[in-house]
Image (tube, rainbow, N blue to C red; front, side, top):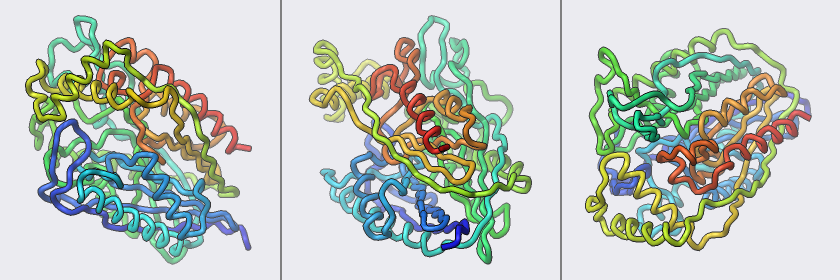
Length: 449
C-alpha cells in the first residue's frame, strides 16, 4: 500500500434525554432543556497500513473505566488496536452524567447510547478517509482565559475569590493564550481544522444542555471559513477558567452571578468562542505545511499515589459528606466557592477511604508527522502544558486534558502547601503533576525515535 497520508472526519449528535442529571458541580442539577446540541466529532488518520483515531466528546469527562469499555468496543468493530484510539472530553459543565452502573436509569441508558454513537462516529470517520496534506500554526486568544487561583492579602490562597474582591493580591501562575491550529486539506472533501486551546468550559451554567464555548467555537469556525469542518480538543486547564476578577467596561455583559459567586452566561460563552475563532483565523491561511512521514500511537500506564486522608480527617469528612448526600449542605458554615471546596474535599476523602494507595492511569501520545498530541487523563495545571510544549523533539506539541480518562485534578507541588479548591479535592498526592511532566516528556522522546 502506498504511503499516502489520509484524513477522515465525522460528527454525530449525542444530546441526552431530558431529566438526566448534569455533571460539573457538587449540586444536583437535572436537565430541563437544550441550548445547543452536544456532539462527538472524530478525526481519523492513515499512512500506509497504520490507522489512528481521535474522538472529541462534548462531555464533562468520562472515567477511565467506562472509556476503556468504549475504546475496546470501537477497536472490535473497526479493527483498530485500542492504543490507536483516543477519546477526549471537552469538559463542558452542562453535559450529562454517564455511568454504566449508576442508580439512575437515565444515566445507565445514556451510557449505552453513547457507546453506540461513539462506535458509529468512529466507523464513519474511517470510511471518510481522503488523501490530505497537513499544516499547522499558532494564533492568540487574549483576555478570555484567566488563572483562577489567587493569593490574598491575608496570605491565604483562594480559587474564584469573586469579582473585584479588594483582598486579591495577584493570580498564582500565568495563563497560556496560544491557540494551536492544525489544518488538513483533503482531496474532493471539506478541509478539517483541529483547534486546541486551554480553558474551562464552565461558562453557561444553569440546567440546560450546552456544549458551552467549544461547541459554539466549532459553529463559528465553520461559519467563518468556507468548506471546513472543525474539531476541538481542550488543553491543559485545571487552574484556568473564564472569570476576569477585574472586569472593565462591558465585560460582564450577558452574565449573571451564579450560586458559587462565579459570573456565567451563554452570551459570554459565545464571546469566548469568537475570540478563540480570532486565533484560528490568525493561523489558518498561513499554516506551515509539513510532510507526514510517520504515524504512531503509544499509551503507557503510570502509577501515582492517591491522596488518602488520616483518621481525624476522615471523621470530619464523613460528617460533611453525610450532610451533602442528605441534601443538607446548607447547614454547613460555608458559602459560595468555599462550600463547594469543603464538600468536594470531604467527598474525595470518603471516596478514597478504602481504595489502594496507588492508582494506575493512562498517559497517551499520538504522533502525526512532526506534530505530537499528549493526552492526560484529567485536569492538569497550566504549567504542565507549558513544560510539555517546550520539549524540542517535535515542531508542535499539543497537550489535551481528560483524554482516555478523567481521573481528577493534577495541581503543581506548591499548590498543596498553598491550598485552594484543586489541591484540596485532588485524588492524587503532591508531586503527581511533576511526575506527569517527566513521563510525558519521556513519552514524547519515545515517539520521536
